[in-house]
Every structure is written in structure tokens, then in C-alpha cells.
Length: 290
Image (spheres, rainbow, N blue to C red):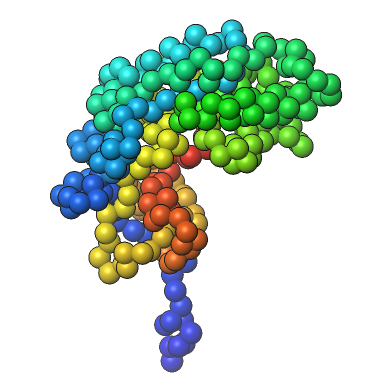
């Protein structure tokens, strides 16, 4: 005799088909399963609203003075086209920031660029390197707060030579920066030295350009409507696994092992805030390049 409990037992995970992504709030034909290909073909989901609000994404910078020019050159490179040199089955040609997102990428005015000394011990104040760095970050935010209307996103560079101070058992400079950014309501993008030497320029440009666009309040895409799923559904990825047996995916770096559908979570935020990135492991809003 069969066990009724076994007949009603839910599976430990569910494999979902690759979902379509929408690149327009009004044209249901602007969908693609591939996020980068969809962006290149249709432009971002918020191209109408974002472009109507501003024609530019303005970048402020913070970091050692010695790398000021390199940071500027990196931002200039996002305006150019790049051919893919890795993962050619996934990474399409990068068309340049303005063509891709329908807005310019520009440098913020001079007062929105803060140049730090090369050595952490040259920061003002006393204490260990972590304390000095935190105080320097806080001072940078206070300075940027005075010109908040002059920029959209701050690029913050932590050089590799500072690694002993940027992360320890009791301190993480990245996390501290994000906490300060939330406190001052200033979006940030962290860079490390590898961004300047990374050989796969198209991959780097896709990642960094999309991160900057999102942090400037743009929406690159959202999940297209799913059959049988209410429109006000938010998606929370609980498990992200690249190695489920027998499962392959063409366009994601990894597969989604388990998706929990959570409705009406934090209703004060727009739905696209939940949906923009949960379906794939492509970007993290707080990731350090690369």
C-alpha cells in the first residue's frame, strides 16, 4: 500500500526553463532569453523613462592620486566598442555605452573627484590602517555630499597594495563603503587593480557598464510575464548551483537550482528592483570589478 505522505511530498528542487527577459514596458515583442543580446538589440527596459529624465550618467571618482588617469581611461574605454575575446558563445560584441544605454557616460565636474594619498598612513588622523581608511571614506562621502547634484555614481578604487588594510577579521572596506553609501544615499562601484589589466575588454565593459547604469537608477531588463504567475510576484533566488546533474543552460553562467516565489515582499520598492538580477548569476550590485 502506497504511503499518502510520499504521494504529497514536494520535490527538493525544481528546474525552470530559461525565462524570457523584457526590454520594454510597452512592447511585448522586445524580449530575449539572453540579457546581453537583448540589450544590444532593444536597449534597456528603462530607456524611455531614464532617457527622459537625464541624457547622461555622470561618474565621480575616489582613489589614490597615482591612478587617477587610469580610472579616467577605464571610463573612457566604456564609450568604445570591444570585440569579445572569451566565452564567445555568451559574450556578444560590446557596442559602446551610449549606443547600448541611450545615454552618455561622462566625467563629473572636478569637485566630484577625490584623490587619496598613495599610503594609508598618509591619511589624516590617528589609529590603525583600518581606522584611517574608514575615516577617509567617511570624509570623502561628506565632501561628495556637498556636490551631490553633480554626479550619479561614485567609482571607488582600492589598490591591491592596500589589501592588508581593506579586509581583516573585523573590517571589510567594501562592506564599510556600502554602509556609508547607504547612510549618505550615494551609490558606489568598487574597483580593484585587476580592472586596469583585465584582458577580456568586452566582458569587462559589459559588466562595468551595466553596474554603473543600474546604480544610476536604470533598469536594464526585467523578467517577462510568466504564464500562470501573478504580475505582482517577486522572485527570490535561494540556491544558485552550477552542477545539477543532467541540466544545461545556454546563456547563464550557472543554473538556478531552486527559486522561491515570494509575493508582496517589501511593497514600497518597485517590482523591477527584485526582478532585475535574481534570475541569473550575471551581475551583483555590489561586486568588485572584476
